[in-house]
Length: 123
Image (cartoon, rainbow, N blue to C red; front, side):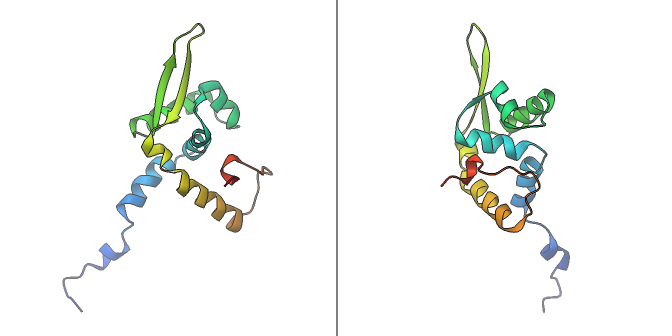
């Protein structure tokens, strides 16, 4: 056995996993991306699609996802002035992973919400 081997290094979590969950592990980030996977949406539509999220939290999470390069904010000149959001290429690339996570959750986590038939359920 190599005496220079650092056993703590073997127990470290993968840096990529750490970065993903620092961003998408925040409450509401995953559902926001999941809604935008289907199509661009206006702020009000996002708020309606994600029960329980406040306007402030939605705004904060959209700003974080935008800063991470996953979401684009687009202002539609009015009247009325409206702001829409869509995924960037990097954000859209999350779709297969989100579908896999949704399938895993169906198989391994109890359904406590009572919601069925979400957008990610479709093939």
